[in-house]
Length: 198
Image (cartoon, helix red, strand yellow):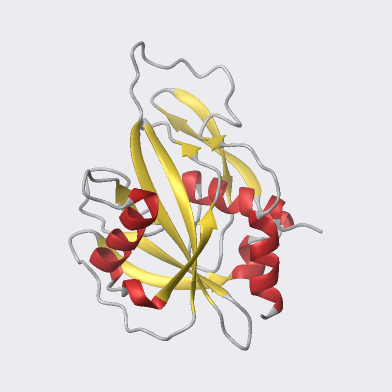
């Protein structure tokens, strides 16, 4: 077992609470009767000799929700999915052509509640084999990877803000090159970064 895999396995064993889009925005008013929908994302980590990398996607610009944003492969948990793990693997296959057999599931990270009323379960998986991405073009514009060391270093995260429906909303961001990783994706990575500290 290499050092990156060992650190990831150790991180899963550390206690950490759930996160949400409201962590940096306490007091955000929520609509009465709000019902959270279940979703799952795959946090795919490619193990390489020159350092592990995390696979991310850039959502298609024509999507109604979160167009052009950086995200993990994932989506709603369907009734016929085998738990969050099954949903995460299905979505990764559909969105980027990642075969289920290429992914070794390590475990779940704490759930993340989004401002759009989803409870997202991040599923951490290792990829040991190479694969050629096949993009679902109506949902995914690009697939790319970033160094695990970059997105698990708390020093690389910043708290920024933007106007959301007339209210200033603060959020985590962890930019990498031309990619602006922010919102729920950055918050999930921030949680992983905190768990991976010695």
